[in-house]
Length: 277
Image 1 (cartoon, rainbow, N blue to C red):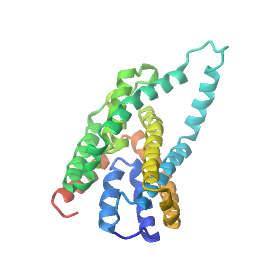
Image 2 (cartoon, rainbow, N blue to C red):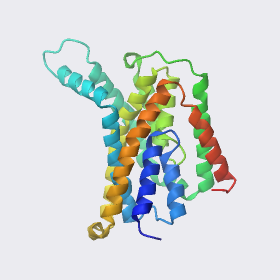
Image 3 (cartoon, one colour):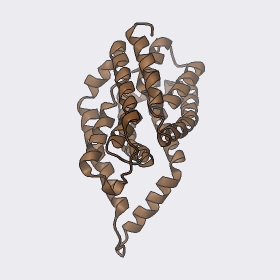
Image 4 (tube, helix red, strand yellow):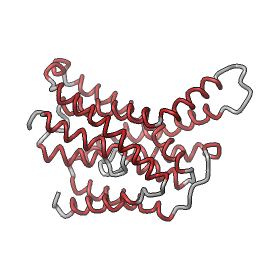
C-alpha cells in the first residue's frame, strides 16, 4: 500500500468536504477512493486524516450555523440563571439532543465492527446507496413540515438518533437519514437541518476520539512518522469545501430539493452493483 501524497490528500479532502454534508454518503465515496488509490483505510496516516477531517467537519458546522449556535448558547446561559421564570426551551433542545445521542452511541459502539465490515464489500455499499436514494426520494411525497421543536417529543428524537447511528454503514448518508427522519415527523425544514447537525456534534466528537484512541494504540512512535503535510493540507481542503457543501445542503432542504440527490445515489449504486466501480 502506498503512503499518502499531497495529490491524494487533495483528492480525498475535496471528496470528504463535498460528501460529508451532501446526502450521498461520504463513507462510501472515501471507501471507493481509498481502494482506487491503493490506500490502506486502517493505516495510521488515514486514521489521522479521518480524525482531522472530522474536526474540520465540526468547524464547518460551527461556521455555517454560527448565528443559530450563538442564539442557542445565549439563551441556554440565560435559562441557567436562578432568576429565570420563562420556559426553558434551550434546555429542552439540549435534552432532546442528549436523548438522540443515546441510540447513536449504542448502535455505533455496539455494532461498530459488524457495520464497518461493509467497507470491504463494495456491492453491499452499492445496495445501501440505492436505499439512501429511495429514502431521499420519499421527500417528494412529504407535505411541508410545520412543527417546531416545541412540539417535538423525546421518542422522535430517539428515532432520529437511531437513524444517525445506522449511518455508520458505508452507503447510508448521515445527513440524509437524519433530515429525512425529522421531516417524516413534520419538523420545519430549517429545524430538521439544524437538529440534524446539532446531534452531529457529539457523534462526530465521539468518532474522532475513538479514531485517535485507535491510532495511539498502534504506537505513539508512529505519530512522528506520519506525512503531516498532506494530512493537514487535505483536512483544510475538506474544511473549506465542507462549508460550501453544507450551505448547498441547507439551500436544498429549504427549497425541498433534497430528492434530487436520489438520482445520483441510484446511479452510483447501480454502477457499483454492476461491477463498473
